[in-house]
Image (cartoon, rainbow, N blue to C red):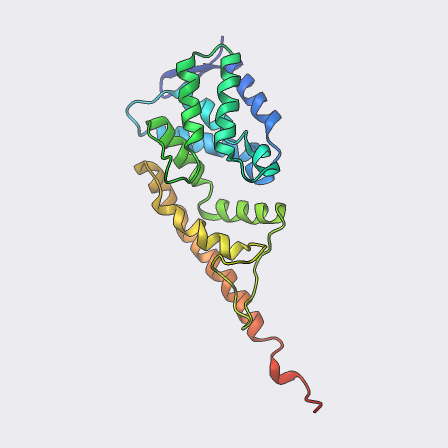
Length: 238
């Protein structure tokens, strides 16, 4: 029987892993939260776990693979929280796979606390690792690429302008959000939200790339607007 081996620790069997992976693949349809996002989160989690003294690799692997399986429900009904929905689905699925209630509950906890929520922070080391690994995928170039993909998926725009022709960067009463608003609301603030030192270290390595892209895009659009049409080019007919 083939086992998943991590730093000498025997974890889930290959068969168990494939069953969890297959269930994950059957549940996700979001282009910015697709299977590649899931695998990146798992890779980051295993990297971070290497710096943790005690961790349950079974729980960590299952939680990473299943952390976004509630996305479809949230997309259909924005009042739902995908972390809560996904944690319930994962719990029921793992019980159906003969996982112990204790381990299934641990996975449920990791998934339910992986989202940005100050009132429900992760508590166990596994939950903190899943949280950090997921947040790493909002950092750097990957985070920007995923944000742009998600904005396109939900009908967002690259930018909006105020009455003076300046890019709107803060969230207001606009019906449609833009990349610049999402960056300032979420992306630029993620670097201070990590629970593990390894997660924070990787995030800071990626931060400059995100800042440079944001500033470059902002400056290019601003300069383009300044060099284009202004009030002086219109003929006065009165």
